[in-house]
Image 1 (cartoon, helix red, strand yellow):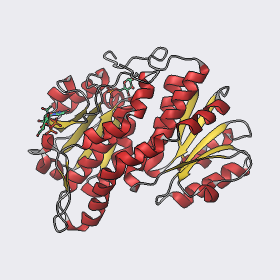
Image 2 (spheres, helix red, strand yellow):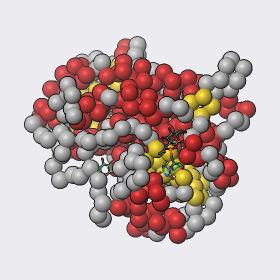
Image 3 (cartoon, protein in one colour):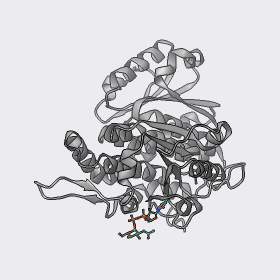
Length: 371
Ligand code: UD1
Ligand code: BG6
């Protein structure tokens, strides 16, 4: 049932204030003023000790699920102190890459039945790693075959292009970081601001959804383009990849997410006065570097769309044709949850304006159960 919406993708994008709330329900424990705030992930209760002892955490998935894991990578590293590596499921299997008994392998899959992810799971089980699932589907093969895991509880997602599952996956992995980090004193202040940030997140997602009309106007400007580049770095490198994936999947427009730190090592050659380039430059430790990226793209007459923190328009805008999208600020590691929303909306509106099928894009399937 699409309710008041025209498409499931649109409904699922707008449902995110509620879906992120259900993902967190019962899992954030906010004690009194003297009591530390903590996270409780029931599914990991008996395995946290093993996870904390592991030598490495390996995130494994495909498509959007892989991007969600990348978005959470650095907060998991920061709070757990354990190195985190990323594997695209098919590539791990192709390479027969190293997976050890001392590893925790985390399988991220919204539907829990993706063939490539299941093959990687079989491989990790054979190699003796502790296998943890993060999935939206109770009873799915990944949920059943992993040793333990967390259901993201985002509710059923029908649009082939994943939207609300993505934001819920990031939230679960941020909670995973908090759970592994445990109650170490050194991280306590950071943990508490993240938990407060999680509690506030549904409001911020609601706020960013108000950009809908503004983004629709932006989509009108891009309707006839052949390509869109999206530059991000740090916490929002994954946002760039995921935004570009959405545009590619549904709007059938070439789009590429680019690590801004790599700009000078190739992508700069593409910049001219015609190619639209989105730059994610919200406030975090990388902000000044992104300001300099904007200056350099502008110096080459790049056609820029800049996503910045509310109130920062003047510090990022390079005048002329530059378009600015202002988003609410949240704790740095949660910012990808907010920042992906305008890009989801952009992909959605571009698709409708270009006259393509939103919910069942050409040649794609929601669940890829064959190799
Ligand atoms: C569970 C209940 C939830 C209830 C809550 C109350 C289920 C599915 N969940 O939620 O309805 O409100 O207790 O305390 O009954 N698992 C895997 N692999 C995965 C995902 C999950 O092995 O990929 C396992 C977990 O380790 C756990 C079980 O499935 O044993 C349920 O996981 P989850 O729903 O995340 O647990 P709770 O949040 O505790
Ligand atoms: C398919 C879907 O390619 O599988 C994508 O079209 C999805 O949206 C990918 O990201 C992985 O699916 P899952 O269920 O393993 O997260």
